[in-house]
Image (cartoon, rainbow, N blue to C red; front, side, top):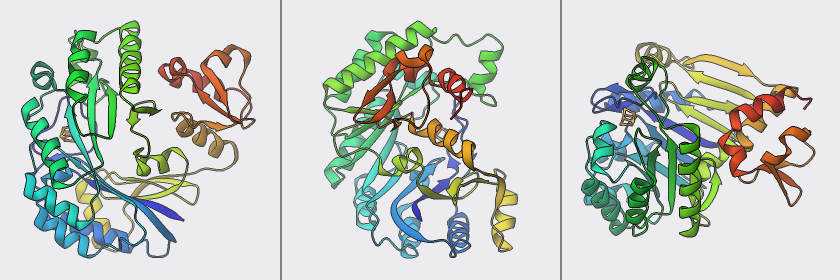
Length: 357
Ligand code: SF4
């Protein structure tokens, strides 16, 4: 039963130097939104019990509200509890937020990244701290009660003092959720290239650990629950859509490069816009790769996503070897990773997967 829909909106004003999402520097088009609707129709044979919808990108907030109005007419929102739209702080004004709310969108996720000018310049972002503050407050005043923001940490020369300044500003904001991402020099990004050539010096592991634990402690003291490695929420405001991913529920991803998990199959769409368009226009599902998960592979896949959360996995699902026990905690018949475990999750999972599951 498909419980979540993800729509990928791949248009951006520019390409940020750290970003490895599929996005194109181009204006959003109505034609693309129509392709999304056509693609959704190709899955009419699936059973749906829709609880969440997520518009990610790219930059969904580059789509004018007039186009969203038309798009939403084709969606059946019965039973849907959470509809998220990712926004860049510079895109929408108060009247746009009011329109979005009337369409049924009830959660906004702002790509703030930092409240310090120097960091925004380094990250190549187009907004200022003031623009982010204005966007978050305007969304709140328009009636949004579920607002998330992204923060990037682990920047070159970033200090705890810098992070303290960010926290001081965040404390006064009407937000219910925060995603804190570690700056990662992904391949095929400008930062990735600079890093490979030795021209980008990132903090060492000890510094990253210090920042991660600092953010976790500070945000916890502000009433945020650290419920996934990179995510913090006030009670009851955990992202329902992302929880589908982390609990192995079925979701359908639509649009160029979007991933789905349905009937034990993970499948991903074409990353190339031309091939995506051609497939949808000829009535074919635009799937480029797929993997069918059975037995051990399915369990591994579940461990990989579920151990990212504080809810963990049922005890007994996997044998935790003695040399890894310090990275795990046991609570109410479940096993979860400690914060130190989260910091090393990839290495730990590799060792765990070498065991019998
Ligand atoms: S970080 Fe966001 S705004 Fe920047 S290129 Fe990536 S998707 Fe676009």
